[in-house]
Length: 352
Image 1 (cartoon, helix red, strand yellow):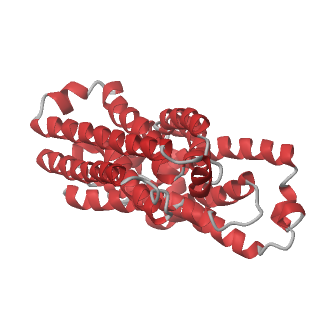
Image 2: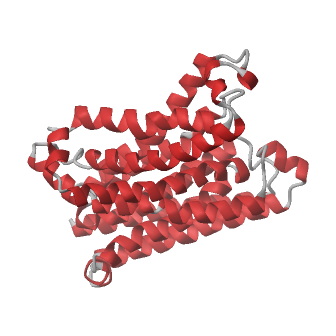
């Protein structure tokens, strides 16, 4: 099947919407500590959803993994462990900075590292980007993305600088700009390891295709491994917090969770976790349609997340006290990000 970058961009938009939306159900969880609902949702993100969809959409999943050399299996898991640290930080950033500003800072760093390091590591930066018209167009799209992210982040910083402490607390209950920025930088760098894990799993995608899996779905077995690595990190940290805070009883309606509707909490956490997984489900579909310059998918994914994350920020009134000038600024950044996804899509279309 010939790759279709237009469809690829649409899939990446769907993935970006899923990523930007996953934290919304968590906002409805009541009387559960962060570590309880994060781990509960994570079971769906890192275990149930990846293996379920890989099992139904790919051919001979277990056989493909059994035929994969051990070293090839290990690298996606290892990068998944590192990505897990970014995921932990990402959850904390949402608490400290809110959806719009938090996503801008984290994903700006994640975009640069996750997009450019794979071709640099493979020695293909010159041949695939600098030496071709399509590659230079994609580089222009990446630059537009970084500029757009910077504008959104600057707008967020100006918005927050103009708010009183009471207004900041009303928009983001645990707002802490200094702490949030530090965590965001760490999370952005570590989150890029997900892209490295996908690149390391390319031989697995080939084996899956040889087993009869359609081109849209060959990346799903790799997701099982990278997500598994993320599980190791997140589970370990959550268990430490559960022991420290003695919060395990909240799963059974004890302590602070007494009287809360447990089925509702479980349902919302499952919805959040599954939505988180769908960003990568659609990412793998989008990457399959981007042709030989598929590593540019990471930029498309990041840009889409910030576009929809900013829209959610407006929906939750995080920008209601911002001045008209700041609002114009943030919408200008979003407009640049939309333009960047179109430019990158055109660059990939030329390369097909």
